[in-house]
Image 1 (cartoon, rainbow, N blue to C red):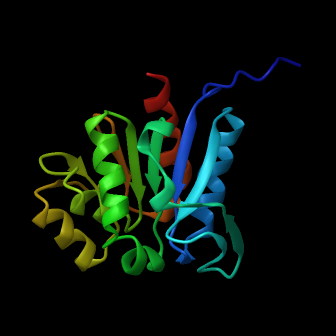
Image 2: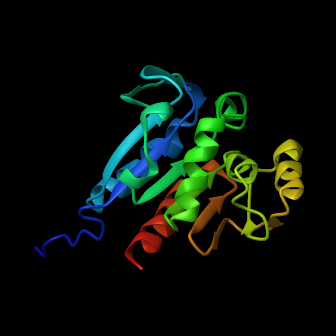
Length: 181
């Protein structure tokens, strides 16, 4: 049996979820990929404690956005689900965290409806990006002057977006590639 070659040892990834109605599949699939590659994953939200997914499952959040510093992470990722629109889209603390990470050229990613957070943080202006099919989300990207694309996953420099939560594995694989190059 050959040894497993992990590509992300020593890398630290922040995954931000809504405190309710986040998409469990997006978290479980992508987190699993990152951890198998050797990365340390921190899950954060607007509040700590147990948070409920759209599917009814529970996750434990130990970190709140207000206590984090983008300098502690190699990648900052925002996950979608209906709760993202309510809790993450308008969150100024998250937008500032992402803005600092973008300025520092950290890997930044968002999936499903979460690319709206990147748009509101000013990160997508002039960049190719994708988002889910909700008209409100697509309009947010247009208003932010993003170059809206319909591909499964879009990588524009250090920013990686995916429109469908079902593409969490493909999105996570692209995040891994961005972290190793």
